[in-house]
Length: 396
Image 1 (cartoon, rainbow, N blue to C red):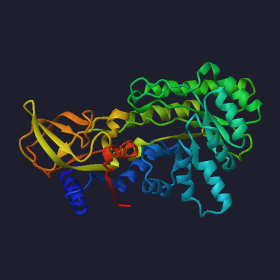
Image 2 (spheres, one colour):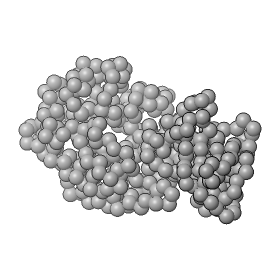
Image 3 (cartoon, rainbow, N blue to C red):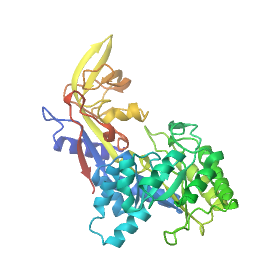
Image 4 (cartoon, rainbow, N blue to C red):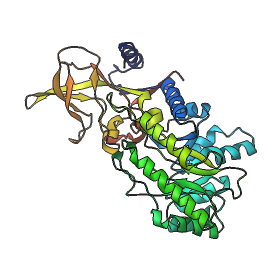
């Protein structure tokens, strides 16, 4: 961040009680950055409709901003579905149903029976990747449109997903055939290259696999799409994984989009295919800055240790679940030394960093971390009774 923005963040934190004796850390979310990310995504991938992955940050204010931009939504639970459904509750019935069909995908491949039963009346798009799931859908959500998720290589992605989800290429067409033969509607294919994907080959390989599966299904007279939901084209869902910059690093997004656009033009005609994606991190990561306070200080084995009013059970939970290292910085200037940063809980595991360069800080001094908008507050807890960070929205 530039110095002007850093000062603005500090001012907002102070105004909102960061120095209160019982104050929590503060997470400041800038909605202008979300708008910028959305427009950047659509300008680099003009054929792709972004379905925001709500799990990355499900705050209603963020969801509303993306809704106002014309965005669509990837949900992973019935509660996330209801979050979006509440946004459209005042639309006329037909418009509401069209929105659900055209702008929401339930992308979690595994769903319990109760969820499927509740979803059925909405006739949504839902994802499957195995025969047992297909049988559940047939029984509890036969009105849904289906997307088959195929296995994708996740090499070089920070968060691995391929060990958990995705039908093998060799079984894909048989799963399509079983769905169609049982009277269900298969609308397309999906894949996911893994979160924070740093390897563009994952995308190109997956696109080739998807193309071959579409071709094989056609050759066996199992037509995907065009089967009862208006004039909607076949759907190709390329998932998420679009990389963002942490600590000033990572510049692969533009290169990946160039490869994707070339593959789209070569393999998937605009006349026949509708291409969607599930960006989550990309939309919100850089929108949030966390401000925390020094609440303790000690010297441990010759090194300064600081204790902050946050930690890995709270906003820094992404370090555990999302495998991202966040760099704490100080608003105060001065000579720096390597320090340890501990979280506020009594657990020895609650360590934000063993080696962060910081100046000599005092109790009450403030530190901040950038790009804290994705998979952070989403997995924050109340461990030890400590509440999550206070959320402040700006530029809504």
